[in-house]
Image 1 (cartoon, rainbow, N blue to C red):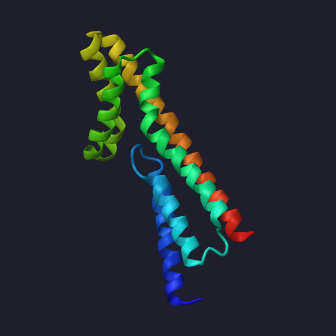
Image 2 (tube, rainbow, N blue to C red):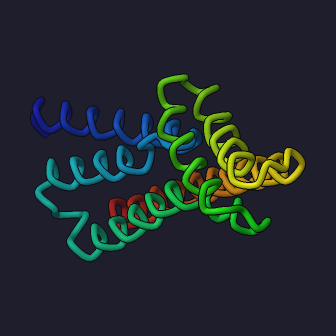
Length: 162
């Protein structure tokens, strides 16, 4: 093993660990970092242990996690009969929430959905229900993203060591 190989593997490990931490937070690219770290490790190893089939499985899991990120809040809002404005508000709140750090990422979709629903129907109780459903949808998605990231890690580890 060369020093360059070791450095690439250390960088890959750092990306995977950062990605695992990032998969806990909504709208942060946790699983893309996990995938990037795994792709870097595969490349550094000359794709000897991690082949294209494994990378395809990892890529499919990555796409699933990305899809969950963008639709979770909107699906939660739709379950309680949210207006289209609430669904859009949820997505806009999620994007704007990035500027507010972790707190913004947590409350942005809730506030966006509730505000969108209130503007559409002028019903504060329904707006609160929609905001709560959006937040629950995001919570479920966060748990699913962690599970997907761990599944990616399992697929990678099995391919790497066996």
